[in-house]
Length: 485
Ligand code: GAL
Image (tube, rainbow, N blue to C red; front, side, top):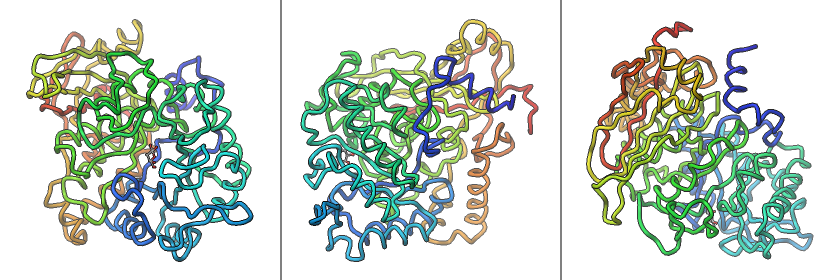
């Protein structure tokens, strides 16, 4: 059996064999792209979208795999007399079909938004009862992606079956069009979509809307992780830590073609420190949450670019194995933030080529050294598997060690990517993207492996200095792994 296939079967576990993700062949790795909502809300229009698309191409995002440009809420002007949705003429004077052509011509794909209710969350026409008409019109415009929300759902929720049936209707309608349309559920985790959505959708939101904040008590997102996983209210204004702590219970539900979606990225939107933005981006990659950028593309600054284009982290997100990392442990610490909270966590999980991810999260308010034994890092392999893994020697690679310099990022932003720095850099990115699909990855590539920072074996521990509200993201590779090195 092919090694990659064998590894994949191992990672999804025998219980999952036979359970297939939505069979549309899409999102085999978590979908990447950009969405209008966090930065533009209802002020989206053709210019905003084409300007963003232009930057996604010229700044090199497209070539790294960020391919979907998603029009979120507020694009529509209701229905025509035949019951078909029509775009808002002021916002889209040339229509959405024309916009789709332009987006396609630049090598990108286009997404749209609706709600499985009578209205969208911003109170535009919803798709409940119009599934086939809406899917047909989107397909006729050339739409490649649907984000499908949960507002005004007429009370058709409360049991997984009710939610499944309502969302399944649209899934079927999309399939009927014959056009491959990525199906992204946005029901905020209501009724446990990780249980009912994998067979009908490519991704599902795990909780309420993510705020642009690291951690904060918020009455609108009342469900704290300490209350367990039975929180009924999806909430909104949820912090990075709140969303993370709700999503750690079902990593195994994520499989190629069907992903847990922890909501879009807030990198570059001003609410997170650089360290927090790196941590947020890293954790999304580890948990295989689709990386959808939401920053104002035309104002991308150097630190934002170098986070979103960290190829070593993206390679974890897009790893061919498609296996979400597990949280192995979590401890509360004394150095707390203004909410009286502070905690540290270890995540780990397999990567292609026999590599292993180890991610330390320090959500305390002080920098600290963190460490973990190989037994912890390979905990999910079971007793025999762990014993086998700790018998090897492992090289440790820091995936943030080769973050692009501000100088290089600015050269790209200022359109000077043809100079020595820019050229080198863009070449490296192209190369890195190509190897996402190869198993194993060549360890010679710094763009993928970061930098080697040490090694460990048997009873040794992996140690990292982790800044407050930060992570250390490490890739372990067996020293005796001679494959394609
Ligand atoms: C929310 C959704 C957001 C955004 C918004 C639009 O329900 O979670 O991501 O799409 O609706 O109104």
